[in-house]
Length: 121
Image (tube, rainbow, N blue to C red; front, side, top):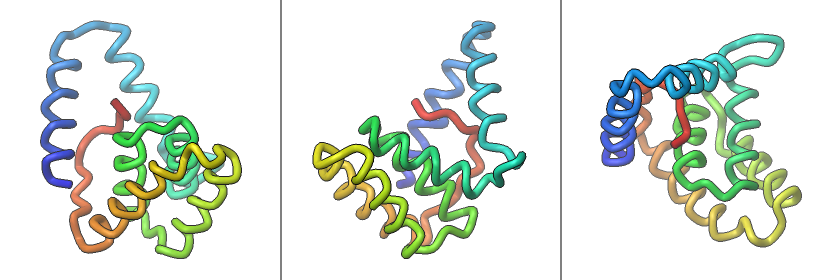
């Protein structure tokens, strides 16, 4: 999980350091989408997790698991979330759920430092 955080942070810095207006705007929009609003951050992270599983983006799954753990989501709540994603996404999501449960175990074991700005990729 630490390597994931390091790589993500380094590459985000490179992207944002390019000073490309469109990239900077997308990163800002992405960050703002997960802030508290009519739905709280916790709920939005779980929605992001379901979407990430259905879309089969392992980096996004890892990110949303880490953010959700930091927001206080419990293992039973994760399992319900995984079930929704499985029902929506079908059996093709199972390999991603296998990796998700592994990442969840790692995150719950205490590797949840998430001071990085949000962006999936």
